[in-house]
Image: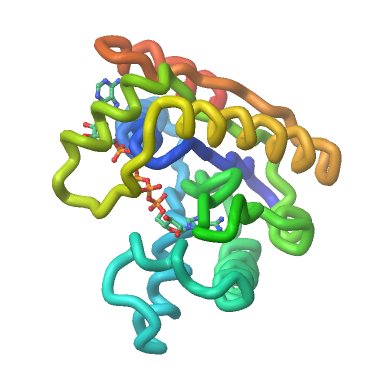
Length: 190
Ligand code: AP5
């Protein structure tokens, strides 16, 4: 299918949605349109319709098999979308029973991304951002635990590159340096 497929990942609260939204405006102004697809929203639509959850933060607590079914349904819908696409999702999801691959083989090979982006920043900055974001029900965890999740995401990203031949781009979204992260992502989208 025509178009560039860019998957954007990062631990909750790293600011990936903020970076994506600003980069989308810049790239559209340059005349390169992208559709912004939120993988979690596709999953949530089905989960809410089935009465499984009331909000998106409950999804990562669902039974593993249910989460996998929701992932598959989302992947099938997303794979059918034509043109330049940004997919806002997770390299891995921290569930009560361990890390769940956000893009297992049957998901990543359905999408076949050109690039997989990891948005990262300092663990303490993520902790503070989570504490200040009252719109979400964030899992409370310390900086060490956030560090482990960011490390795990790099490992998952490498396996996705092995399965699809996509490149892996690391973008740092540091405090006071949102503009730099946006410029890095815009350059990746061009
Ligand atoms: P999702 O919708 O991706 O939610 P999330 O992980 O909580 O991510 P957010 O978009 O809310 O946070 P963000 O990191 O983008 O931060 P934000 O820009 O808001 O996923 C929801 C659920 O769907 C998941 O929990 C999971 O259950 C499920 N799901 C999704 N994909 C899945 C998959 N593939 N497989 C299985 N399940 C899946 O920013 C946070 C804060 O930081 C804001 O206050 C912002 O103002 C601030 N900020 C941002 N940048 C900066 C900066 N540079 N300096 C200072 N502050 C900043």
